[in-house]
Image 1 (cartoon, rainbow, N blue to C red):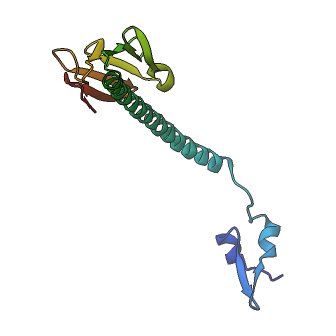
Image 2 (image 1 turned 60 degrees about the vertical axis):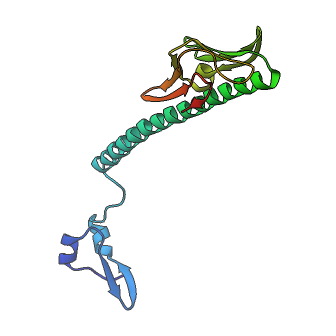
Image 3 (image 1 turned 30 degrees about the vertical axis):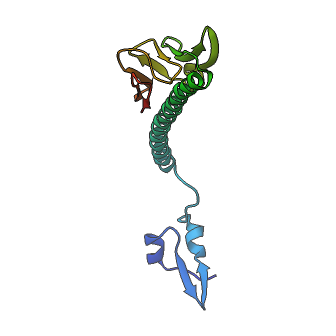
Length: 173
């Protein structure tokens, strides 16, 4: 081992020398206690604060992502339920109605008193529904009954999506 000078001990906590083509550890620095191994409490506190802040940001973004995905999936299920009801009315040549229960956030497809399909969007996706009407009926030719369009708002948290069913029975997002 080579010896280190006093200047090196003052300016560095881990000083290295190049001696004979090899890097040699200064034994004197280690002997004097100037070489520090490990971390101090303030360094650990700073790292934990930074990790906590980044974790909080990640949780907020993850929850908004979860809300967007749930609303998107529930909206797709609403659209597919209305498409199913319209196809059922045409293929069976029967009057078919889609009932909207906003308190339970569910859709019920009925044809002549029989329940054909039942979708619980509140339980499966955790969303809330609001609608301008409580039902939408399809004639045997696939056209909708009623004098006005139906708007359904699917909401979870700050995310919302609106689905419009025209009085002719077409569905738009």
